[in-house]
Image (cartoon, rainbow, N blue to C red):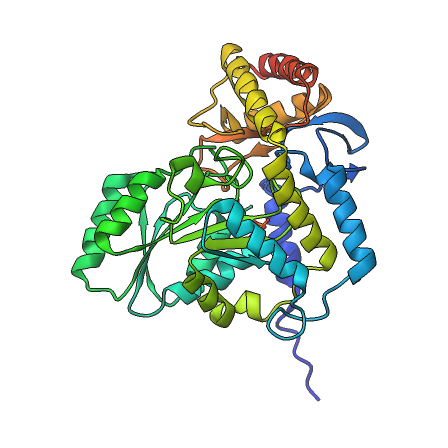
Length: 399
Ligand SMILES: *Cc1c(COP(=O)(O)O)cnc(C)c1O
């Protein structure tokens, strides 16, 4: 027997990792000890948390925790199957009914995660002979969903409505069967909001389907956190609204809201929904409880926005550039990656946990610290955080 040694099938693993490490592009995991809240113990240090997606601090809400515990006791740790076979429990249906009511849509459908939602529905909405038109800064899970589709693809520059219209005109000329326009609702790196009114109008003019991934807008935009359609008064006018329970809702899970036709179609076509196990009852109960908390306790939403406005204004007064943000995602622009990383380290020394976002996650020269507000932070916490920003900003010559 000849043994060939010309190829080591595992060599690339270490090589790629070492290359990332050499360029300081590898992730080093931070460890939370205790719950994810407004103040956390991270890597052994008490810190103010400014980079979690737990906007409303609902992951620590007693009613939501209680609902998860009770449902787990009564219904078990797992659902036993996928939804279309044997894993569809009454509690899953209740979440969807309540969610549709809350968002003012005809129907809703819950997925395992937001990522699974984009990967599981985008390829089913556009196929060969169709085209998908995307904003250039769309989330990675949208990009992967688009990659799974056999349709043609086009991109418009971030928020450039002129270019979107050009792409629609082009698509119209080429006689595609279907046109799907996809955008983030709130953009996760900059905290700006898609021009939903203009996009929906353009989609209507050109007979295109509108698709908004509102993962960072759910629980944040709208009078009670209903999301981007309520923010613009476009309830029932966005064809597909995607969201997540993993951010402001404080739990986990993805969702779509739209017409009954959309949900019936997804029931039968959407592969991640059909072929992957449904949420454990404890998760579904926590989702349901979180929706009810949003409806009945507006104070969390109000505090989130009060905190956001105070923090953003004070950062600007200190001389920081907060980019185009109009939401609780407030980037602190640093320019080069090195400054962003140093600022993050200085912040951590001063009791603030906020991570740098650098190339390739954002363009070269646009490195930043991305802060995300939490409704559970008190005025004193915010002042402590602002003091830390002032000290750290001066230490790295940013202000
Ligand atoms: C976070 C995020 C997702 C992923 O949601 P998960 O439920 O955590 O998988 C999808 N889309 C956008 C725009 C996001 O920001």
